[in-house]
Length: 128
Image 1 (cartoon, rainbow, N blue to C red):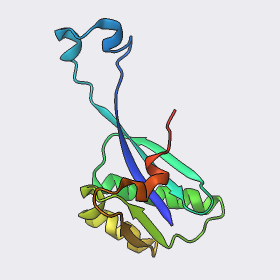
Image 2 (cartoon, helix red, strand yellow; image 1 turned 90 degrees about the horizontal axis):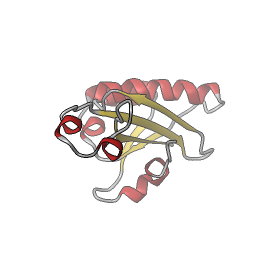
Image 3 (cartoon, one colour; image 1 turned 60 degrees about the vertical axis):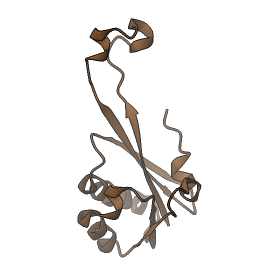
Image 4 (cartoon, rainbow, N blue to C red; image 1 turned 90 degrees about the vertical axis):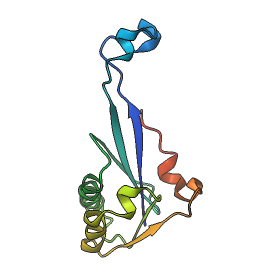
């Protein structure tokens, strides 16, 4: 079983953020956006794979899943039986993500609503 999750991180501008420059209008108006850290963790071996991608759309998540499966296959994990995700829209309603799970012959499973500890391996992964 593979645990998947996306973590949204705010980008820090060159030269520092608001702690260095204060909360002035010049700093606030920069709107530099977010990076999304996609993580996949094997339930049995705890082998992790992560990528920083520009968004969390369903097609991006599907492409990440296929790259993660190739990474796991290169490390000896040849068969993915289940893919456990939270109930985010990019996993639940995306046809591309559903097709990626079908191509891997994996069953897509979701955590119960408002129970993030079910997908705790991916939720607690620390990105440094």
